[in-house]
Image 1 (spheres, rainbow, N blue to C red):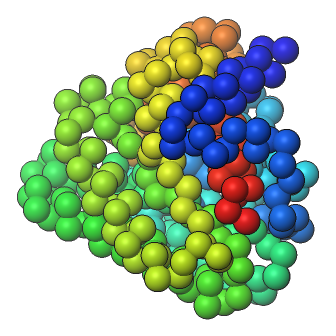
Image 2: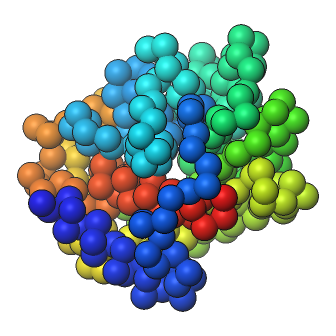
Length: 317
């Protein structure tokens, strides 16, 4: 009942927004497309548990935005490590290695797509999802704070990451993908991590550099086959006005699962939601929080993002 109430709250709040005014009532409109399969590439935001768990509260429910998006079409997705078509990996970067946690064996988005295309063809009725950028932001802001790169290099690297992600979208389109949903990074300046490291303004600039370059470079493909989902906009709404969406806390991580290792890439000894479940939360009402750890979203925030993606697709396709 609580989940249903939260979704009704979300629809009402979304309809109050001018940016989503035309989406009001879209939940009752069937999309013109009916995908047979979802093929997903990306980083920790889209990872459904390649290594057994996801970056969220691992509660056994649909707790990943891409999986929620697919479920709205009655399609079930599973990680590629379990024979499914979700190739996204936690901490994966777009084209560079090592990953956000320093692991060189984690497949980049480029390598994920390599693997898929080596043994599969994209069908006319496939929905392809590309969701990446979070790990690249984490790596580059950490390098800046360590003095390894300058601020100019930081922004240049973010811009290049956006270009690299756009190149993969074009690659998938050239390989036959007729429906590609793509999102870059959400705004990490709004996360608890940004406040901990005191880098809110810089993280916002990095997010914009990556996402803007991505949008510019995929613009030539038009909206008939490629659709950009503005995760940054949506998560900002959750964080900035939590009560409007049924959340009660948008400032603090709900997990207390501290990782002695590199975890989600934010450093050793930090909360890592990949280790989080219903017994490692500070509040049993964990779905009233926006953030699971200091970067990633709770199951409910993920589901809201997946519902938002579905609503935008219904409007456009």
